[in-house]
Length: 466
Length: 73
Image (cartoon, helix red, strand yellow):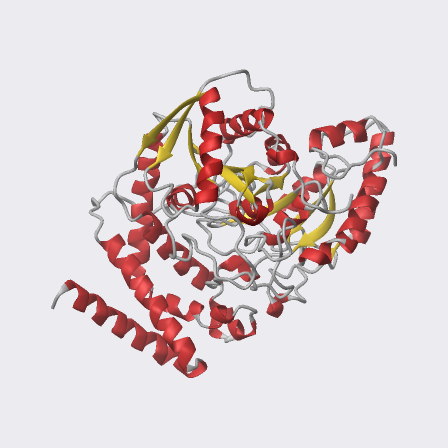
């Protein structure tokens, strides 16, 4: 193979595949080798699906040679967070030791849709045990060990889609699928310096994905660019009878949006607790955003945004894992805090849970009202650059820091996009997050593309061999 | 009883409930952590309880009646 596919954006890679300058089998072999050789360096991989990948790649190759090109993901390797069910005897571990031998009967809907698009599953990627729903507070919370960001062997990849972030960042796969209940796509994307998209709740079927919190869980793409995320979202979005929360609203990625001006809003409280290096990068990003439109401060009504979502998350997670918790299985989890935190959820009273879901309805309406005046809300991607291994992290889900963007975005089910926007302390990536109105992923992606057309942070890659 | 005392009484009662169920599984350090976690839950619950709602503010997402042959929404 003469061209180098590592760190190549999907559209460009797809062009080479379609023109048969590179074969899907060659691509699969390249990325399988990287997953096997480089993946362990970051603890990023649970299972390399070599046999399945080569079978899918051979099929893609035959189809393309026969002139049956399916689209931009045809023959493209990818990795999936290990909470997505995969049939064929491939384990689905949920990142947790007690489930390391779990084999599920069939593929999750997202995996099936990617297969239908011709994509090639090369790996199940590491994650925080049970997607962080037991209350973990430091990076060492996976049975496969803490995942490190490829930017530093001493810093965390973020979680809970830890391996998805690290694998894309290190060029082990061209794109990956992650999941977010509260922060689990944005955190690893930010820590690893990649682009991640949290779709609107109901945009992507969760059938076959581990349930952490039925009313908050979302699946979405993690990739090198906003354009990549749009291409992947189009393949995985859409109604699914197996997931009654999916919407019949069709999704087509609008890759060629014409020029337009955007109205950006900055939420009061969105900068609380943000580190100086993240703020410096954010201010530089605001200069870029002012080239694209207006930037104004704004505020939401005084509601317990974070508290309501934490109540919902804790109650639903406790119920989702009720039998496991009751059995005492949590004692076998990796993070010491996961051994007792789940028991505390019995203190969430039923009336408080229901009230939180009613408050959530008010919150969703108030958030939507804001989007009459703004197209996109913007904020620093994270509070800080990647946390050092061995240290506790701060975050809204844990209640140790404010995270108004995370609470509003996940609570109201709104789409979010995170893009790299520089480097901060210890040479680690900084990031910018964007949040849009429900079902307006294309608006976020248009802004993401415009930002990435004016900056080159998404083209910077960690020091890893090609 | 002051507001703070009421909150503390609630924490104590809920901690007693949880430890009655699971206390035997936990050591002293874990019980301390459990107590802090319950304090946080009570703080969150009290913040949510303080919101004024009207009768028609429904939970989200709303429950839907089920029919096997109902087409997907």
